[in-house]
Length: 129
Length: 129
DNA sequence: GCCGTACTACGAAACTTTTCGTTGAAACTA
DNA sequence: TAGTTTCAACGAAAAGTTTCGTAGTACGGC
Image (tube, rainbow over all chains, first blue to last red; front, side):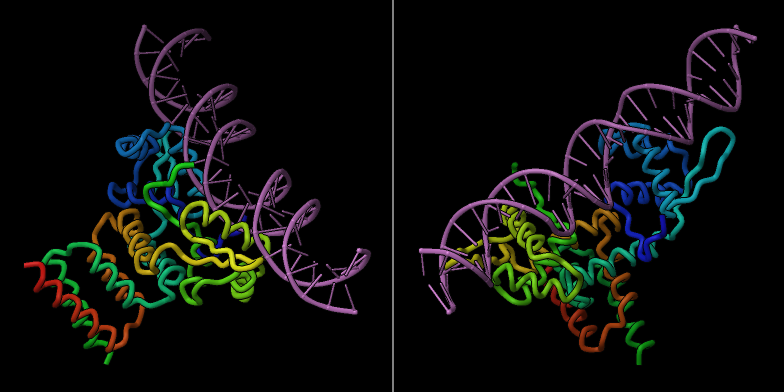
């Protein structure tokens, strides 16, 4: 099967990616134990997902003794940006400012977060022009 | 089938919602003609999607003469916020500032857009505390 | 060497999403 | 009114996703 040009994880896949991002390379058992704290999920289900994800190129696998250690193929930020871009196109017609404004409106952002965002905007203003 | 508590359109459904948001209430034929400019899609496919979406409550239908006119049930902004919230949880672990920063980093925002965002943050700062 | 444990591989069932062929009804046309 | 066009309803095939049962393999203890 050829790689899709844009690789978009399914919901179950993304849940596993988040575990790997947070905990670093892990065995199937480790991933499954963490996943199982959220929702009931069998060991073989997690294994199958990791196998599929490795097929797709979302994860890589290293054999360590008798068990396999899985890790993500992409930095968290790269995948987040990809998913955000996708949503931006599909739901916001490409308007980043609309998206940002919705994001800010939705969540009660902390003062610290607002400061971070302000700083980022200031940086972009300087770079840009 | 019971309504899911959070109603999340699939990709194909979202594409149709965008058409309805942009063009207002439309007949199946009108929706299909616009959808077909993006990708080849049969009339009955569009019809079936609109029927499913009406079942789910994503759209509403009014019979106008012999044809039916479909419209969205939710404001564009409401659905956008819902999808954004979903992505925020699933991919960003709930960190709105991370999401916003990725969004700003991704797209070249214009000066005007940056001003809008700055203003929004200022407003929130005043409200919040 | 034999048995139990810990693991992966395989395949398929259950479910969801996407697509469209076929049918029948309504309305318009000559 | 008979033929043609335009439409919605229905059902089901095709494709993709999620789940897990079963089987087989390697390793450690006895």
